[in-house]
Amino acid sequence: MSAAHEPEELDGPHEGPIKTPKQLILAVVFAFVVPIFGIVLLVMFVTVEHRPAAGSDQLSAQAVSERIRPVGVVEIKDASDLASLKTGEQVFSGQCSACHATGALGAPKLGDAAAWASRIKSGFDALLHSALAGKGQMPPQGGGDFSDFEIARAVVYMTGKSGGNFPEPTQPAAASSGAPTTTATAAAAGGAPSATVAAATSTAGTPQPDPNAGRPNGTQTATPAAATQVAAANPAPSPAATPAAATSGPPALYNQVCTACHSTGVAGAPKVGDKAAWAPRIALGIDELTKVAIHGKGAMPPKGGSSASDDDIKAVVTYMVNASK
Image 1 (cartoon, rainbow, N blue to C red):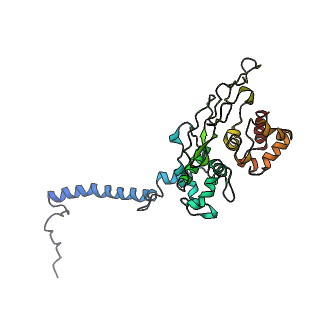
Image 2: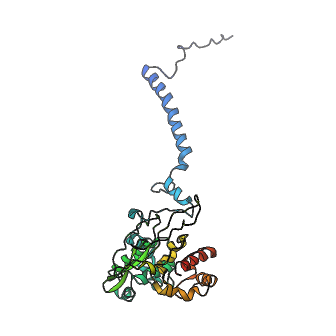
């Protein structure tokens, strides 16, 4: 009979993987480092979709804001602050260069003196009118949205680079009512007539009617300044020859659009205040004149190139008629 097998005795108690103090320290360190490293990787994985691709800023806050910005914006400019208005070169680069830098659609190229010679000979007033109202395939302001003063600067810049020598337009100063407008005054430049955008101001010595006369207290309005063409070579007109200003003052549409031609006589437009020029037109009646202004006539485009309502057109026609009787 065989003897019972006796269980083998173990050499000693079970031992763990940590046998030295150094191993213990490493175990403790890795117990903290590994979880922290894992958390960092997890955070990077969650936020990676908000990070732009390498070498791209398409997801930057500025780029996103530019893409989702409204189509229409309101930009307010102080006409008395030259720094807020664009220079002729800036207007050319931002709008006019599309055609005038390449000669597209028959536009005279910048610097082509031969192509610009006949245009410069027509004078600054005619060039400014064409730029403001449009001509041929060129829309008003070349399709831009600038002030008359900025367009005048662009005309001077382009002609100056193409053989012209028109003087730089002066900044329209605020009139006594605080509302700036523009008129053109004749000046000689290289033998061709030119114009300077000047302030609308009352001629010295010319009495202005008080629109508050006869109004009860509490309903009075501020007296607007009458827009008067100031010619360097002409003496100041006598009080009898100065038309009375309309009591309501010029409508905003007149200062924005109509003054470009009707304060200077550009393209045969009757000047506001010229009784002889307006007499046969006034005889037609306000309604007929309004119809002509709405549909355009001769060099004047429909509504003067504006998008004003028919009522606004009638209001500005009424103002010019009243100021020219």
